[in-house]
Image (cartoon, rainbow, N blue to C red; front, side, top):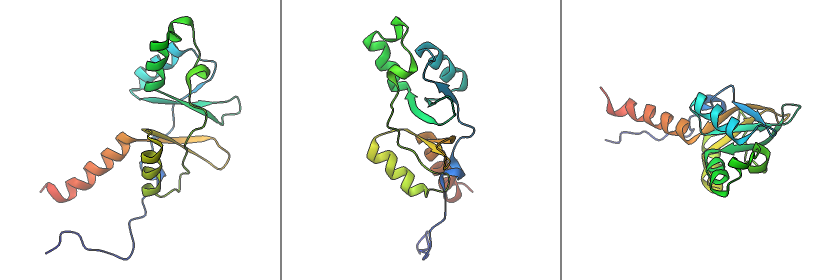
Length: 144
């Protein structure tokens, strides 16, 4: 007897259902060490970089911080704007979760900012969020 029954429709999980919100943000002018301290304080692996109007300008990740240390930029007073990724892969709150995960895989990224129709960050989906969802789903079938 099959454990899973196939249905004509799939569950409608959306980015908003698993995103971390509100997102933790930083300005391009922040120092690399400030960004690292914010990440440590919040226990996160990325910060969404916003411009003065609050719209997304980029993302800075742990990888970016490691590269800035390796290149010496962090020690020379480098700024977030010097190391961030500018062409950010983003999602909308109502984007299908399967589509969002495929974007992550194709772009080889671990964090995707979720933005509203004006480009203002409203959350972020990380690989950790996806794994937590998977573990929760597995427990439905494994635990008594």
